[in-house]
Image 1 (cartoon, rainbow, N blue to C red):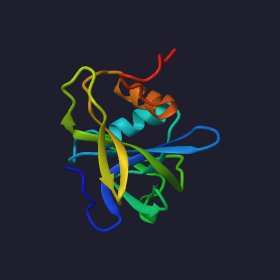
Image 2 (image 1 turned 90 degrees about the vertical axis):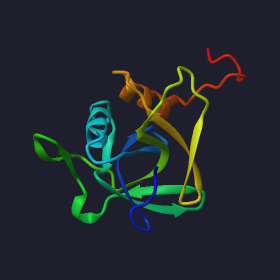
Image 3 (image 1 turned 30 degrees about the vertical axis):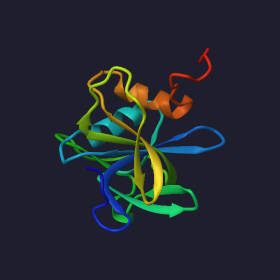
Length: 154
């Protein structure tokens, strides 16, 4: 279950992709040890920048949720077995996608999932066992998600 730890703060790791005219943040949630920082590091290797590790601030602005890091954690990400690593970071970014590492997706072609966060409806992906999960998240953020009934994606 995804819920803020305290008002405006959630136990989760976030990264952002710079898509030219806009930033798009991904918030990764899950129990301690579920792989939040590990997935974030994979996304960072694919061009994302760190927003926050372990604790992410949430602020609703209009119809968007803006993510940022508590000042003490800004620019740091933990990797179990290595320790704290410094990272290029983004001060804040609008949330575009939520990842739930506590729930495994069992459907091959799942229906869209959504989660209400700070009163905003956010697309949600569940944990996927594929080695390409991080690449699929990146592609989702860059190009979106095709649904049955939409025009041919080609």
